[in-house]
Length: 293
Image 1: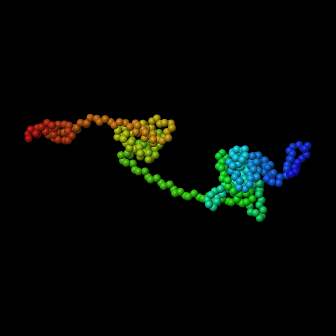
Image 2: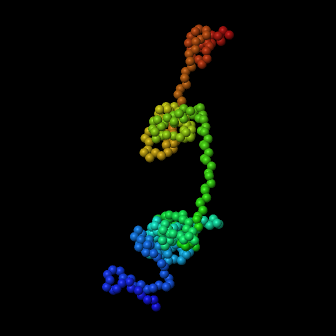
Image 3: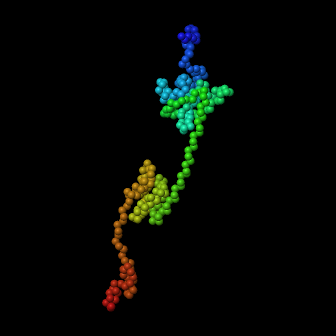
């Protein structure tokens, strides 16, 4: 039967230890960790829990939360505390077959204070990995590197292949001569309203519609006022608005007027003025010539 070892007499004020000597199932933890006032009690308890687990145990945030009443958020915060003070290191190790496995190392003393013996080389510093505080990723149960062994240093990640540079866009096609007045009008839209700044390809696409307006007798100033008047406050695509107005507000073609009269001509015989599309003789002189013939 294990013997009890009280730490003080019953009349001593304050804490009294009533301990039993342990011979199995116990873990040795230094007072430097147990009484580290820079760590929260949750972080100290997590460090004690990690020290008590066997090598190869699953120590992901979800796996620990399934065994203790603490939430995943508090466990993630405690792990970051232990990492900041050198009691914990998390990293990923690339295996020769290309797989990447998570590794976790629990230190019973901070890494900065570990003094390796001359016979044992100092362990390599693993690359720490910062987990997401809100949605921690689960870790796969894998064999874990004990604190007394040297963790494998992960190789540098492969460089991504260099992408070829984006080819330069081809130069814009020249504007046809019949659409040049229309393209000049569209380019001047931004002078009436800075919000109607059109790209060159939009000017070339909309120029035929403006040409139709000009062919139907619309004055250029009237076209500019129609396209730039009453712009909406949430205008995002000016080219789409201009295209819509060119199609929806297209003016009708002008009605054909009466034919113009023939110009005046001077008769070659009597010098009288008469209307005719071609010069020559007036009607009276033509009749006299026919009678004489």
